[in-house]
Image (cartoon, rainbow, N blue to C red; front, side, top):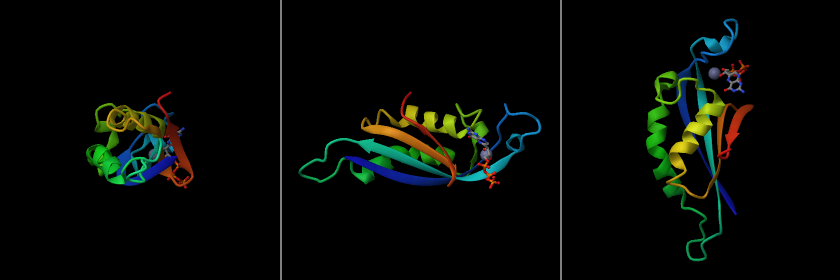
Length: 118
Ligand SMILES: Nc1nc2c(c(=O)[nH]1)N=C([C@H](O)[C@H](O)COP(=O)(O)OP(=O)(O)OP(=O)(O)O)CN2
Ligand SMILES: [Zn+2]
């Protein structure tokens, strides 16, 4: 069984390694959406794969490091593409959520990156 919890954060960024003419080289912002997907058996007592409260508790401190920040200044996010943000989140939340199977980071409803540890 799979469960997914989504979160939102607002942040500014720029992409330092795109061409001078690329609009994303300039500072701009996104209303990011993050989805954490977890997979495992349903506990017969609780009926949960993982308690959503536990997912929120694990991700909350990371969310605080992203929300309303300039992502390029966050350690490890000097090149804050959706791909790199997804891997950054995975690396920092996986130990607390061993059943994690995917991190999705949406820059817009149409554009996202998904990371599953590889
Ligand atoms: N593979 C990736 N490509 C791009 C990324 C990325 O993270 N991974 N990021 C960007 C920029 O962040 C850019 O801001 C994204 O632009 P876009 O998706 O077009 O979003 P907009 O808000 O600018 O939407 P429009 O409706 O097109 O104005 C670029 N590429
Ligand atoms: Zn952008």
